[in-house]
Length: 195
Image (tube, rainbow, N blue to C red; front, side):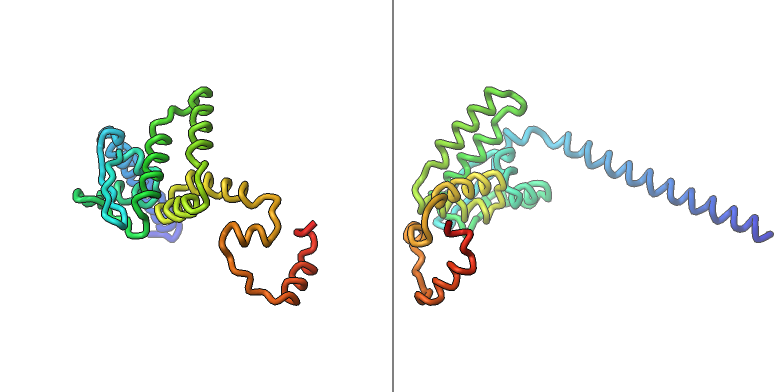
């Protein structure tokens, strides 16, 4: 064979392999799509969540999927039928997380009235004391419930807005371990924050 003919054959062979890889990827994507469409209605499938203090909560897969951790477990078919133990989440904040996820999973998308109703729900839902807010934020963070994390952070920001460092310390029960000299140096260095 001449070098030109070999070069043409190897290019043709490379292009053919590339097309085959593309087809394989397309088939895989189609398979994944078809598989997920056959899995059934996740709003009807239930899973059990178990708090650190042993309380059990039944929640739909659709609601549980708002937690990234639980969504990955559901997608990977790793949910234990006996229940998913959440060792860092006590019953009271878990009940609130389940309430939030259930409400948000059931909310209709695109409907302006439904969006306004969900906003009202969120405003009432997050109107809790600082201890519950902290427990809720910790639970949402552990479970990776992004919407609830954002809601709890905004509420925390509302609590500290316009407060002095001393008021914030009192609110969060933070002990001031700065000497008066260190505190003055910080105030001087970040003067803009104290105006």
